[in-house]
Amino acid sequence: MTRSTTNGQRPPVGDWATDWDHLDPRWRNDPYPIWDELRSTCPIAHTRRFMGAYLPTRYEDVRAIAYDTERFSSRRVIVRDYRLDPPPSTPPITADPPEHKALKQILLPLFVPGEIAKIEPQTRRLCNELIDKFMSEGRCDAAQQYSRNVPVRVIATMLGVPKDDGDLFIRWIHEILEVGIKNEEIMRDGMDAMNRYLAAEIEKRKDAPRDDLITKVVSGKINGERLTDELALGMLRLLLAAGIDTTWSAIGAALWHLARVPQDAKRLVAEPDLMSTAIEEFLRAYAPVTMAREVVKCAEINGHPIEAGNMVLLAFPAANRDPAMFPDADRVIIDRKENRHAAFSLGIHRCIGSNLARMELTVAVQEWLKRIPDFCLDPARPVTWSEGTVRGPRSVPILFGKAAC
Amino acid sequence: MSSMKVHVDPDKCQGHNRCKVLAPELFELDGYGNAKEIGHGSVPPGLEEKAELARANCPEWAIGIVEE
Image 1 (cartoon, rainbow over the protein chains, first blue to last red):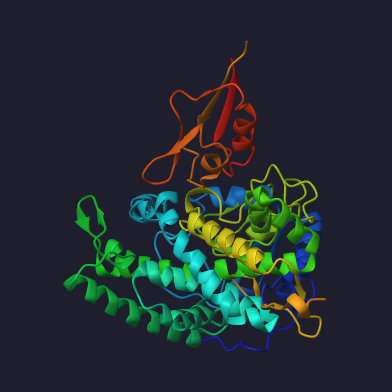
Image 2 (cartoon, one colour; image 1 turned 120 degrees about the horizontal axis):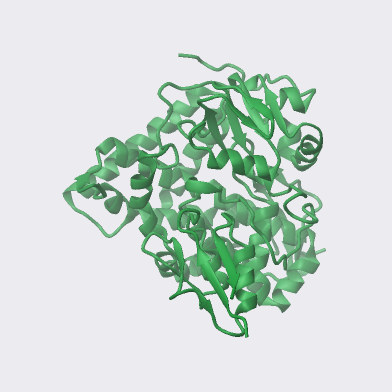
């Protein structure tokens, strides 16, 4: 077993084409120029960090790899400094064909648009309750006081656990997916705590089923057979981990954009029918999520040899900025008509929660604009960003009302 | 007069739900959220633009349009 000790001592990146590192502060603060440069000079970059990993930045290449489940396995979906054996299992996202399909079909009916529509009214209420808390102050942190609290409370309600446990979930995700990329001990602590919590919830449902997601997963069947406890636990780990910092990041980035580009906020207030294309454009331009694959058979992508044993960081956010796929890729165009963005992945691992995320993002922006149509960034305080697998703003200081710029 | 037909390739559709949002008159979802064309996919007059929009926003390139 490898114990990582690189925390805080990473050498800075010199050459992004041969030594890329998504934990470098330059990537965290502004990855777009890095991806643009790589796309035109070295579209499939490599690094010896993370025990070897590729970074494709062209849409076409990201798509080809996402579709090639034979050579690019999902058994590992996070690029870390170390490799765990066996890797943590969160099916179906960590499953490959042929097992993947039946596992995904257990979850898909729980996240179809009709199911998500049922929780929209409560999501609207939640957004307004959050705004009530800072409305009279004329200032807030849109990431910490608003965006952060929407998805975690919605998924807690769906799972059937107390909403107030949300802070715990956010801590575990931070430990597993952010700090845990370079510190195995912290990752294991987060994972153990999450496992204990979910295992206890599973036991409660066995004695007394409820109308919630945990019960539905625990009673899920494949070919008439109940899921093993281990599979059910893995799927619940996914449901708990996948929909929190991801959507938090998407909502935060949308509000960050609207604070910096007030003409877009004004236009959305005046033309609410544009909301749907605007949300897709925010998802394209500020896609928060990267996933990874493990190369299990040597491959060739666009003439570039890909060696087995490496990881691949599937940077969907970089694919979404590829000018070969999206005209004016670096401009945010809120009425963009054609938008086949990859924010929710492509191929069989399309995000199960995409309907939920879109609903939360739409409702959170709509309710914000209803209450706070005029707002700007607070020039006195910095915007900060998360690091690692999911990138989004973790502090967005906002002034509004009389305090606005 | 030419007529337009839409078709969702079930092997390509991954349930992104963009077509159903953009052209609910033309597409429906199954219990897993995967899309198919309503009926035989005939696009009634006036909905051609919505059909084009649905096609152009499918992340999996699963929607085909034929003009007869």
